[in-house]
Amino acid sequence: MGFNLELQRRLEAIPGVERVASGFPLPLTGGLFNGRYGLEDALTNPEAFGQATYRVVGAGYFEAMGTALLAGRTFSEADNSDSTNVVVVDDKLARILWPTESAIGKRFLIRAITPEPEWVEVVGVVEHQRDEDLAVEGPETVYFTDRYLGSFGGTWVVKTGSDPMSLVGAIRAEIGSLDSDVPVADIELMRTYVDRAMGPTRFALTLIGVFGVLALVLASIGLYGVLSYVVRQRSAEIGVRMAFGAERGSILRLVVGQGLSLAGGGVLLGLIVAVPLTRFMESLLVGVTATDPLTYVGISLLFAAIAAVACYLPARRATHVDPVTALRDG
Image 1 (cartoon, one colour):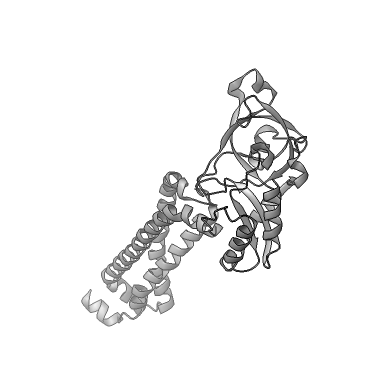
Image 2 (cartoon, helix red, strand yellow):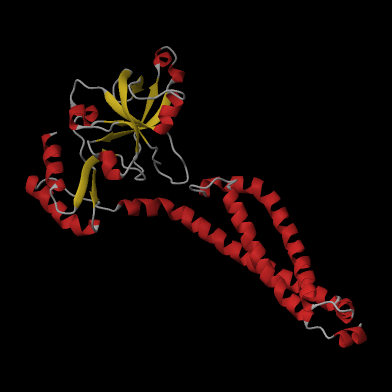
């Protein structure tokens, strides 16, 4: 424990470093440490235990990771005392155990670190963090102090106010001066973990986006072709309208309106089909639900705007129809 405290002190003294803390496993690193939790009824009914991710963190971890504190407090060095049995939980676990009450000061059972169930007290509630996949919410989380696993400082989080990679040399030097036998490996940005976790989703969404744009282009070309054909078929009618004094603006509105009515029908049909189909894509959606109204409205307006452009060209051609030629050809 003394090594960890001294290392934290030295790293925090490096210019540009704002926060330093130990933690295991870090979010999105794939190293899951699972355990059980429950209330008093779980003592007589083992099935009442729920499963959660356990994380062992040091003082300052939540501040270094930028994890929002929703209630209570985070850990301090005093919480590593053998006389304390305190934990921090995420808001997902708090809602499960105490849906209508504050979790602060409540006690519950944990089962994994000790052979028998052990009572712990909640001193803080933080926002939920995803474990391995950004597209999956993941299980609820219980955070423990270092004392539950003795001294665990294998993974450290360093928050900086400058370029993090510019401090790598100083960090290595401080660790080496403290204990030259301690290896330093896998120094990475948290952004790297996020990008790695988003890789498969980003690839799938890129393909979907490419095919979506292609479908939009083909639909626009098709709409343009249909309206061009309709204008040619109705050239005599348009000629008669213009011969009887119809203005070009009214002809333009007539043709564009017909095209937009076709586009509107397509949008409506697409929305009816999209609502059930997008539920199959929920695993690819992050921060957006399968029925997000803003997304549906935005896509519908985008298609309507592109359809209006596709309608305008044949409509503009219709306004230049010569009434005499149209009547003679008709």
